[in-house]
Amino acid sequence: MARPPTAAQRRVVEDADPGTGRLRGTDAQLAALVRLGLAFRHPRPPHDHFLTPAGHRLREAEPEPAAPTATDSGGGVFAARVGGADEPPPGPSRTREVRGAWQGLLELRRMTNPDGATDRPCGWERAHLVRAAALALEAAGHQPENADTPGYRVRATPQPEAVAVYGPALQPYADTLEAAGWQCGEYTEARTRTRHLLASPRRV
Image 1 (cartoon, rainbow, N blue to C red):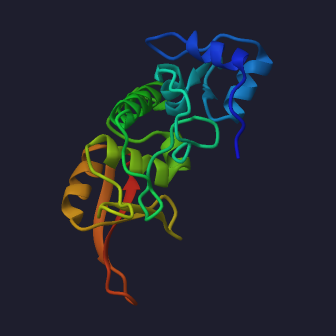
Image 2: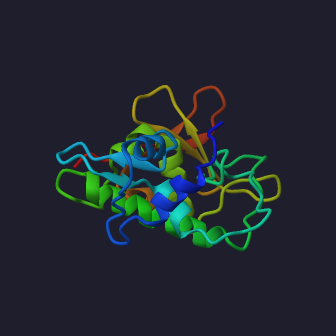
């Protein structure tokens, strides 16, 4: 379970460049933010550090005393809802949280894709397939499954760079993911006969 950022680390996040998410801080602070998943080190010189989607979410969040942590990544950091009976119903601030995370992800695409493209997934998404696909679905207005409401479920698969998406209506999910830079196909599980999408990040 990740620890919450310290006050000093939060100040570095809050002082990030509002347009690019570029960070300034000590080497130790920046390395700690990378470990927390709030920043990444750009692969090209001068190897500056920038906010990840989780970092953008933390910076844009308004203080909410005693906020529920069921959807946090252990320390108040945004977590995509992948669907399941244990998912809580959306609260009043969830739309703002999702919007901020999605905008942060688009900025991450712009900064890390070699051509600056925002219409296809970046390296962070390929390393966090389930969370990335779930964020794309929720940002488009789809609801994750929970104990009270049917909706999407995103699950890992044995296949490299592919996730399975289940739900009551697969075509709208496919349309959303394809618009977000994923490629999708519909399949039937041999044993259960359950229909699902197999979705992979598009490379070109």
